[in-house]
Image 1 (cartoon, rainbow, N blue to C red):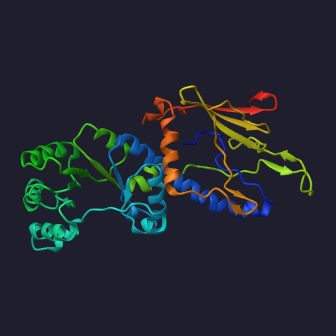
Image 2 (image 1 turned 45 degrees about the vertical axis):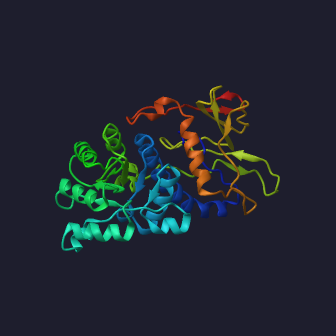
Image 3 (image 1 turned 30 degrees about the vertical axis):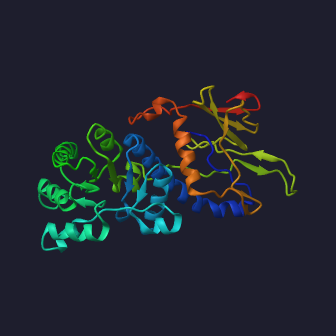
Length: 337
C-alpha cells in the first residue's frame, strides 16, 4: 500500500553507486508494484474466492515470472507459470486448453484422457463445443465427483447461473465453477453475485489493468557537505515547474488509530516521524554496508500485504477514481509542511 509523496525506498551511497542502481530499481518497482496493485484490487473484489494468475502469454517471458510473484504477494492463490513455481515457490495450477480438446477425435475422448491422467478432481474446459452437453459428459464420466469446470466465453454471469443449476440437478453439487476470459477487477466485482468459485486472470493483470507502471521516481534529496565520512548531509531539491521535489532525508510511518485503522502517512523531512504505541514504521533496513539484512520468505510479504490492506479505511475498497484513502502529512523542523 503506497501513497503520494511517501518514500518507498531510500538509497544511501556514493553518487556513482546510487546512479547505477537507479534504472534497475525503478524497472523492478514500477512493473512489479503495478502488477501487485492490480492483483490487490482483483483479490479484494474476489472477496475470498481464489484467483489464478494466467498472463504469461501476454507479456515478456521474464516479466511473466515477475508478474506471477507479484500477484501471489497481493493475494492470488496460484499461477500457471511453472518458472515462478520453480524459482519462487509460487503454487502452480492450470486447466486444459481448447487445443487439448481439439487434439482428440471427440470431446469425450479428451475428457477421458484428462481424467485418467489427473483424476476426477481435475477442471474440465467445457466451452469448446456445447457447454451444457460438455457439463453433462463431465459429470457422467466422474460419477458426479468432477472437481470443477471452466467457462471461457459468453456472458459469464448468466452462464454461471445456468451451469450451477445444471450441475446441481445432476447431483454434482460440489463441482466448482471457474471463469476466465479477459477478466479485470471491474468484471470480477460484477460477478460477485454469480455462483462463481474462482477466477483466472491474464492480460489485465500483467499489464497493470490499465496502469502498466506506477510512475515511481528516483531523486537525489540530500548530499554530503564534504568528503569526510561524518560530513553533515545537506538537503537538495528540484524546483522545476511540474516536477518539484521535497529535499532532505526522510522517515515515514503509518499512523493508526486505537482500533488499528490507518489514518495518515506521516513523513518526517529531516526530523523523525515519531508515532505512538501502535503506529507502524514504513521504512525498514534491506541492505546495510553491502550485506542483505531484509530477506524474508515470500509468505511473509504476502501476509504483510493482507495486513496492510486490512488496516485501510473502508473507502479504500472503492473501484472508482478518487482521492487517496489516507492523506500524507509532511513534517519538517518547523512542523507540518
